[in-house]
Image (cartoon, rainbow, N blue to C red; front, side, top):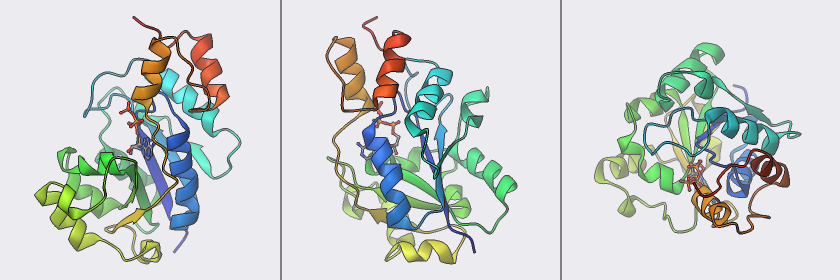
Length: 217
Ligand code: ATP
């Protein structure tokens, strides 16, 4: 079986170093062949992003440029329908076949909300889930909603080596460098005319400036 491929979805409004370290560290922690970044087009679980999908996609491309293990998938941004993760995974299964392990990367906050996602149980039929630690969001069954806690306990893998032995179905957690950075914080700084430097790549900040994004409305 070939090395697992990770799928990293998000609004990336804008992409920042918390995202980049999550993706980078997951490669070694989980033994991945690569990470496919998937900016959400019209994310169904949250409010309308402040900038367009094309702009968020452009920022992800700038942030990930030069990393040979990273690829960027524009399909969700280009689609007119809402982006549901389960549909994306079905598309990837058609593209890649049923055998290669797929790993959906999520931060602990996103995982805690999984039971609200469209056809969330089917996601585990299509892929594994890897949950990274994030400051302020414990990854333990006791802090999850009951139905998700039960699945977490049943599906939890002792370590990442289990990701290679099946195409999907397992849940693994991993501890990444803890970075209390969020896109919300960056949008607030920028809206208040404050510096967001060193929270996200300079190339992304240059793009934000050049396109006058995240200014106070
Ligand atoms: P917002 O503040 O707008 O909600 P965000 O910073 O959480 O945005 P998203 O694009 O919503 O960023 O996140 C994409 C994925 O990255 C999610 O799975 C989220 O849990 C994870 N993530 C984001 N920031 C971090 C971080 N600092 N540490 C670990 N995981 C993170």
